[in-house]
Length: 350
Image (tube, rainbow, N blue to C red; front, top):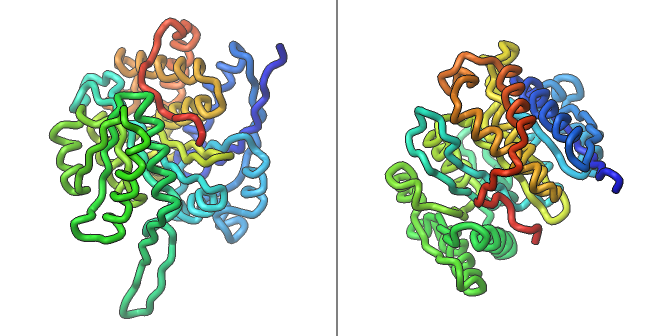
């Protein structure tokens, strides 16, 4: 049987982006020697460096290369992050932002046993970018539509029914009519999923309960800006944003990236944590249908984190980026196939 060949648009972007992307590709290339797939990487310029060079953070050529790819791997951008993300999310209708928050057994994590996913609507809300004003006042328009809300609700329910069968709808409907609108659509969609329990929390109460009782949650579904904030909060519970990947998923295209930023203060020092970027590639493999390889990466990372001997400074270790990457590959070479992770990251594309 011939190998499947995937065309991947690769955007290293800024700061530590090139370093963690190199680590990620090293892991993917190692897997490709063992599995029935291979990769063609199409390197694309984006972010602050591209803006200085071309006058725009997302050059037209980069967008066109993304169009021709099977999936997009993106590193963190710095000041121009929104100029890269928004055109891709909205241009390809990547309506679901999926951020798993999982405990990997780090010795100093605050709450062992966390395994939740924040699913946020990814194309509208305040991030729609409809803003206007003058030197005395600025306005931002919040857009919440029935189509987008129903689509993200169904995505969350499809995911939850393959996990612990709990969806928590997070909103601020006691104050904002747009939030009540979103909440009502989520609960209307819940009627199609009788086996999934649906509950709701105001966003401030959710922020509190993520700290008080994070193990309660399974799938949180919410609007764009609330999901962005809550996922960073949840990252602190498992020790570091360096353990949080994310997926931007549409019906035909998807982009995968770490949650963390470009960290210009440590760029070039060789100490960036590559695990979130590597986990993002595991989400990509899931989306491409290579589920076993995705599990292998996740289990290898769990073994490295639990062992604790080879971790970067953000996890109170002394290892560098290359050493951590090689440790992950070493655990992959031991073959993690016998291990099974029961939690699911992505539902079938709707």
